[in-house]
Image (cartoon, rainbow, N blue to C red; front, side, top):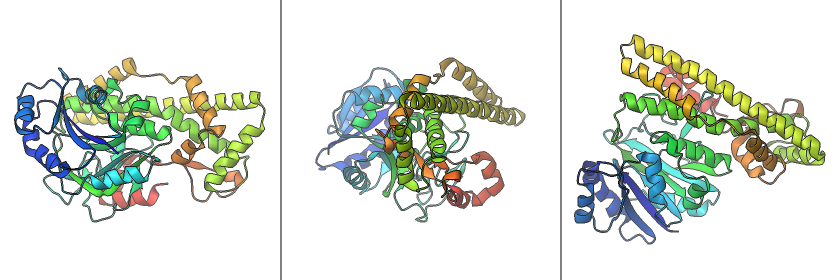
Length: 419
């Protein structure tokens, strides 16, 4: 399996000088592995550094700053490999960081994307903000991680040392099959930077691929290399892109849950994957007009629920903006306001026809693997009158309120309440 480790750089000469040697050293001599630096039009001497100090590293010049999303799209289109490993320039790697990821992808063809645990550079026993031990989202689309909730970080004491399927892994260190990346259309260029990897991972999950954290691999991330945590522009990108992601991914996600919860009321009471197949059998036993009407109704329900969730999320964002304002953070208040305004101009309205076709392919049994990947049967729902499927890696609570209430117990609370 061939792998290209691709580092997207923009005026990061200092990071390349400091952290690229660890990448080159640990991959030297590995068959089928090459290191690539793709440059987003830097003017700080990054190109000269690579040519002079790292002749074994392939250099791709992109000409201008396309941002993280489009920069990677353009760079990866110039490369041929079975897998791409996207790596931030401010990441330091240890000796055996790559092999576990390569082995996982070779042994698990159902996995489309994987990533390592991410630790802090300045406190190596602590998880790092960007991705920790894999990411989830809550009921309102707020991302959080196993090992990181808001600004609260957990120490790594082996509690996440079993490989786990998650909703997303961090773009600071993300391995993706090239076939998956290109079939999904790559990153959404509208995002420019921030949350484009969550959107990509979520769309991969919607197509039946698994997204997995491989804890045998650990990397160390400095963080804030392009924009500091308190940057209003970073806040703007996060709020705007989070809403764009929800508009893109929630309709199909909710529609799948509606489809099998409705079918589960009338299908036989078998559990787990058998229940999914029974739902599909029931759907196929009915005539075409019934199937079309059902798929259309389910699609409409999924789209409406997505719209309601986004409206609720925007109300919560508005409350956060007021907190910023009354805390004297006028720049943050404006960032949220501008993020919402731009979201309304950029948002993608759900296409009911496409959602219906997606649901029909799943209920018809052609892509039942997608339902198995997205849904899990909730505890205590063993009989057909109470059959209920939850969404994997989507926490059915509000992370902000839970973080306030549970404080330091939040990590244990999340583990106890995940479906």
